[in-house]
Amino acid sequence: HVQLVESGGDLVQPGGSLRLSCAVSEYTDRTYCLGWFRQVPGKGREKVATLYTDLSYTDPDNPYYADSVQGRFTISLDNARNALYLQMNNLKPEDTARYYCAADAADSGGTCRYRGYNYWGQGTQVTVSS
Image 1: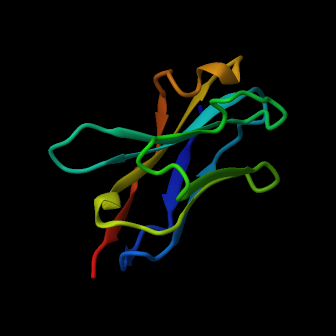
Image 2 (image 1 turned 45 degrees about the horizontal axis):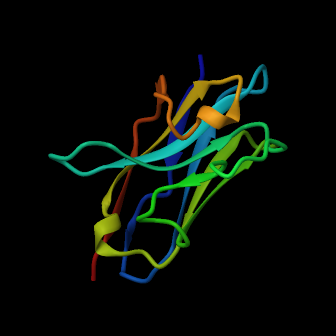
């Protein structure tokens, strides 16, 4: 099954930038939904952004971004490197969380925003503080 390993979390000042990376094991055998999620202790997991591995798929919800990160975060996929990225700009203290990448096999990119995800990484901590 798909294995995911996140990296890139760090302590950053408000207004700063970070790029999270997620190494994704073999997924070229079929199409997948990939996503970034975040969680703060004591709160539920929040969906941050999702993307379909078929990059030719066009849909208003692909890629999808949570309202809280729209315009500041960018999700991208490098198929040559089997890597998923989350570029985070203009970071705010409320972005502090543990960030997870996730994957789920999917025949349609239209479900990435709404579906549950079966494969998860271990997470990487992002702390935004002065």
